[in-house]
Image 1: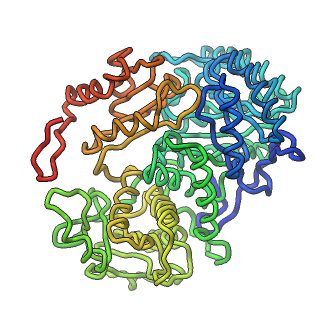
Image 2: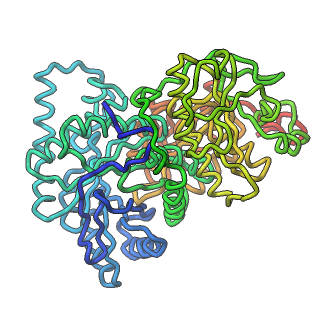
Length: 599
């Protein structure tokens, strides 16, 4: 199976066109040769018509091309009529997407008023029970018949009204049927989406797209690759558009890095027709990141250099870190083998940050670039066995090679594989390093895409970030990329959903409050979810969960298991800390003097 034409040369995937609304009046066409479409989501109550229209206009003003609104009930779905009518009165015809979970009746109502409906195959016809059950082939077929009975009315209505559909699968919210047959895996996500797509096709309805979202960029990348390959296997007319996004990416630098790794790597491989960057921030800020990310792709992809196709130097459908021998990186660090991915800095950066580093600090240089025993290679040249003396030599791509980093390092691995070499690799975020200074937000995105994509391929034993000119910022960025890519855990990891009309508390305020209390913890993942829809399922692999259960009430989880219910919001952060302490993962934060502080 193949998910793209070549891992070395950019070719945009050819997808069929899907029309959302009337293109002559603000609608969009995604797929085909059309530019990637940018979208976002409202954060307010859907019953608040005035605020919904206000937020829609604010998004359109910054370049949002599709606006999604949650419709948790039939009543909310019915109010979409008023929202759409009001925005039309104001001359705004941006397509609206109704976001549906659990309620087929709400989907049927929403289809009357909006240009697109998003359904989640994991909960459109199923309620999540986490039941363990063996399904015989006959029982499974019967389940598919039940799904078709529930889903067909919407398909027929969408076709009749000329609407578009998003089949949006989310990691962690798969049905019990899929979980028991395929597990909580990329394969399960793909199979879940294909079940619903086959029903659409049975009724000759093709105006739909797919999404495969996860809060884990590596899982998300794997899902889209597998989906794309499976669609190609199904036939040339299965080339439906792809909606890319890392769900619950969080806020600030971490949210941008996760999104850049997941979305950016797929865009660089030619996948993706529409994107949404999910941040726990005001929605217009998502569009800024969309714009910045899309603008980087031409600079990060190879459009000209013809490279002999060496095949894929990694397994694109099953993550496995490339095997290398363990070697000495510096006097204090080793890399390769079972060692974690290490962080290397330039001598100039080391000289600036070293005086500020304390003995217990986790964020610190683990090697100095100029001092490494490093062999720099040009992968564009046909390497010979005598070019590399042994497997225990650290290698990298030499500066000045006229290739984007992703292409260059993939090609380097292909050459090493051809020669039977397993050398550890130092990844660089840029190969042309000079006096030009990138804007920090652009340096962050480029480094995250370049290094994060390769780490998701299983490539890399140490990394070097130079595109960010600030010494301390470049060091911190390197560690944050490793954390976002799931390679290291040096701080608390937060899975925080962006707010929407289902949210039962102020996500930005609560996330900040939880971070203040817990950001000193290491190796702990905390999910902050606004409602039960993004609760036990969407939390996926989080250690602890803080989930809105009712207005003013919070449920706390350990993994996917609810432990405490209906805690008053004023007490919930304290109870979360208690829960972390009960499970042996709490440590007291240190004061500035290094002495544990009381909390």
